[in-house]
Amino acid sequence: MGNLFIVVFLSVLPSLGRIDKLPRVLAEMPPDSKVLAWVDFTGEGEVPDSWVREVARTGARVRVRSRWFRSVSVRATRRQLEKIVALPFVRRICPVARFKRSRPLPSRPLGVLKPLPDEGIYGPSYAQVAMLGVPRLHEMGLSGKDVRIA
Image (cartoon, rainbow, N blue to C red; front, top):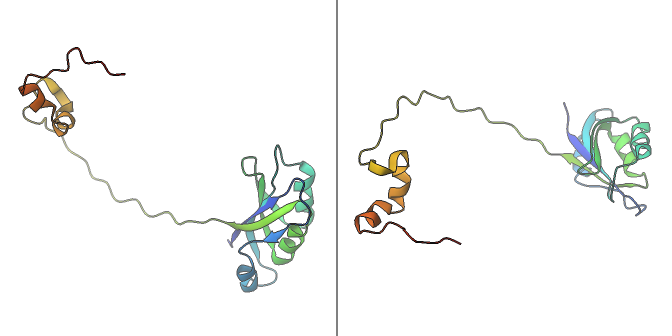
């Protein structure tokens, strides 16, 4: 499927476009192959539709528009990425992070849980209160009566 990239847009600062982490990726790309990238915009508010249309006019395919990151992801060739980074409102283009999900471990039935001995007044919470030493405190006559917690 190729590499993924993000393009970052500017709101007011012109000519700061740069390609982050792309020189190595671009050098390894066959000229007509496509990669996925994020195009980042900065500033506040919605990314103007006109900016997204400008990115699309380079021939890159706009895939996802992120309101949270003020960016769009694109599938683009090397030439298209170079055109996008030259746009005055683009801050940077960077790869989209990728990960490989590991296979889940096989599960097995738990079986029937047996109650712990000495649960007494604690019920199913015995294991937790025992770790805190509560049964021993109760044996010493402490109950927590009249204790305020602020």
